[in-house]
Length: 231
Image 1 (cartoon, rainbow, N blue to C red):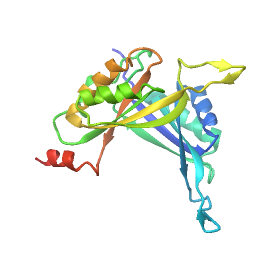
Image 2: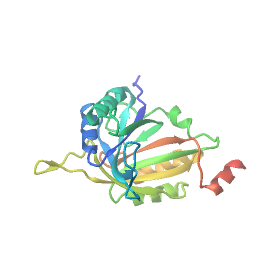
Image 3: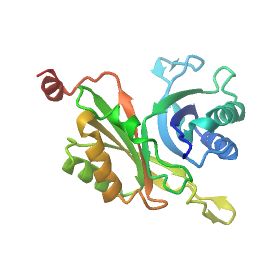
Image 4: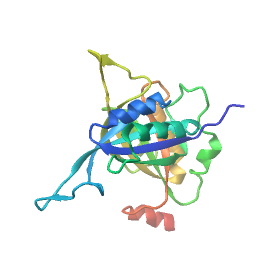
């Protein structure tokens, strides 16, 4: 019997420039890569205003997808690398992942069918599909998801490297640009949208990208869909 491995998503928010320490530590601990988003924000230990003007600090947001069985060691490595236990150094959190595609190179099977069934039955509710692909491929993801019943998608820009992206120029690591697509979808359409994205973006091929599903507890701002749910 093939051993089952669930996945977890580690989200780490650190000061701009500290993301390399996060990805380096996570890879050393067994993770296969990470995706970095650029953000801004103010923490409790950071000055909110300067001369009456809002002070905004640049942040790196690192997404690290890891199998559950190595989660403790990866989280410990990240915490130690950027001193998350020290005030003002950053924060981290862990989210549960119910389904992943685009990791066919691994020796174990994808999460068992029953796990996705729990999120794609005919009961009311929504899921969030998060797809990470190479820069410029987000259009395919959005088009394929719309064809399968989604109403659109939101594209974020980031950078990162995975197991198939280890290029260097003059001993400097290259971090390829990435597109991150967020797709909010009704539960009963999740499976069909995932299949379309996987086939259309060729996620079953090494280096093409990765896609996973996050459960959604509550939504606002999609009144027409919520009205359909209530019928």
